[in-house]
Image 1 (tube, rainbow, N blue to C red):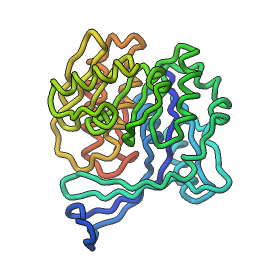
Image 2 (spheres, rainbow, N blue to C red):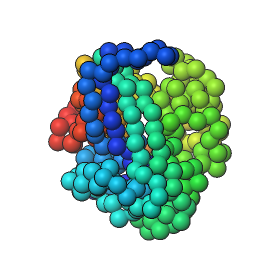
Image 3 (cartoon, rainbow, N blue to C red):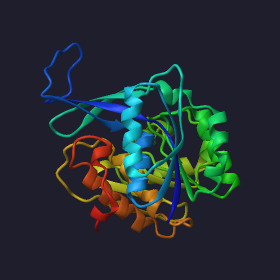
Image 4 (cartoon, rainbow, N blue to C red):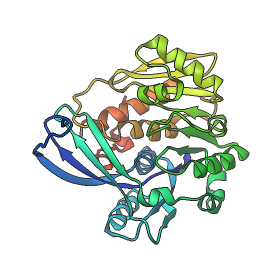
Length: 302
């Protein structure tokens, strides 16, 4: 069984259903409102554990009802939450998701306790990181914590996966060089490289730029179209599975959790792992919400 560690965020998602995204200054009525577990880190950890991996999660919560709600969810899935600690002052993270009738979303984030994760928290989890096969992180938690975690991982020959989301255009060079694989979507790839990703040629150019910035391997996801990969000498494209999309929330997180669970350490099975991850994502987008929409491995058949 693969051992995966995820360093990342916990958010309680409030989903607001609307016909379309509002214009500036416009007031609109909602058709529905619901609450679900979310946060990029939590989504990726849940995806990895549901994909069949032994998964540990490093994160932080507040002292509130939202924290209780999330911890109960983690326990149900058998997620290792030994390193999910409590902050005395900041509240548990929150996300407010505007979801339109076409399944597209806009998301507002309150970082809360997610932003209080320190390098000391990472050092406390160093044995867990060192014994893993793969470490995943994203940008809803402090960069200093991510760098410390990736340093520990690389010192112990642990595969590192960086999901550069939400998009940033000033990622520390140190973090990029510690990343074995970077997995941006087209928007994030453009923010990092300055290259607008619109077709296969621009994907190759963006990947080449990322390689020159220090990242060894690149996967660029392009939503319903699929995902491009570049291993330096070798590249390719894996098409997405065509489905009726209800809600794209957590689709990218599902892809990363399942990818990490399936990928060999030498990346020799990258296309097969990407197809598996893509299939899981295609199931996620058919249900509204984040963690509740992430499938279990028994339901992911290619």
